[in-house]
Image (cartoon, rainbow, N blue to C red):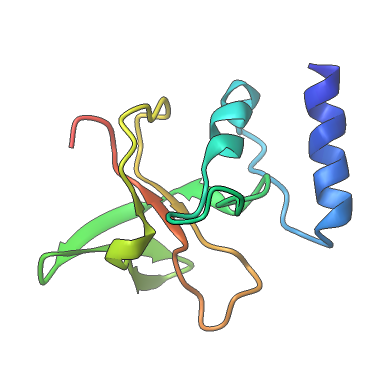
Length: 113
């Protein structure tokens, strides 16, 4: 656990100022979140400790949209990860705070869908 904490701290220090994970974050899920990679890139991580969160999702015109900070963001097909190992039980969207316009870079479906 100490190694994980140190690794997360080092990651935060090298990526600049980022938002902190929610206080209620389940730290046992950290390895799963760290395993998420941008589709088509085995090296680019989907998130740091705060970019990937649970979001409300709707389907509009046969495409997913994610509610983030009061705005419905489209989920492009290229951002969808086909993973069946989602241990969270929720929709997960990764939205880096430094992109403009804001966009979903990784999207993981709720288990069972």
